[in-house]
Image (cartoon, rainbow, N blue to C red):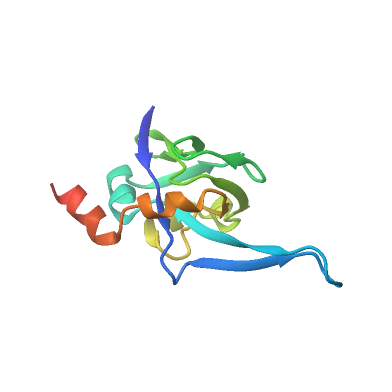
Amino acid sequence: MDSITVSSTSSSSSTTSITSGAGGGGGGGGGVLICSVIGITDFAQGELGDIVYLEIDTLDSQIDSNEVFGTVEAVKTVSDLFMPITGKVIEVNPSLEDKPELVNEDPYGEGWIIKVHITEESQIDGLLSPSDYKNLIDS
């Protein structure tokens, strides 16, 4: 089984902050939950080829950075999907069940794979920027 690196689009356009807290009254503060959309890069989907199936059974699970959160099956291979950042999986893209090819067609849009609540905010700084990633794959 191959493995691929997953991208987390945690730029301001795809990271959402959600304020949470106890309602009503003066007690109970809240915090800010940072959510991120996670998928594979255009480069990775191109390397995999035609994607025919994704298995993501980690909904509502806390997954550590660099742990497997699912698998992606392409015509020629099956690859593990590794979490780029520690977080709780809060949503799996329902469109991929019937149309896994969305990952190939639109990896940064409709082909997203999971959404997570980031639980280790300090890890955000360790993610590659788009330009750093491009330099990595071009070298």
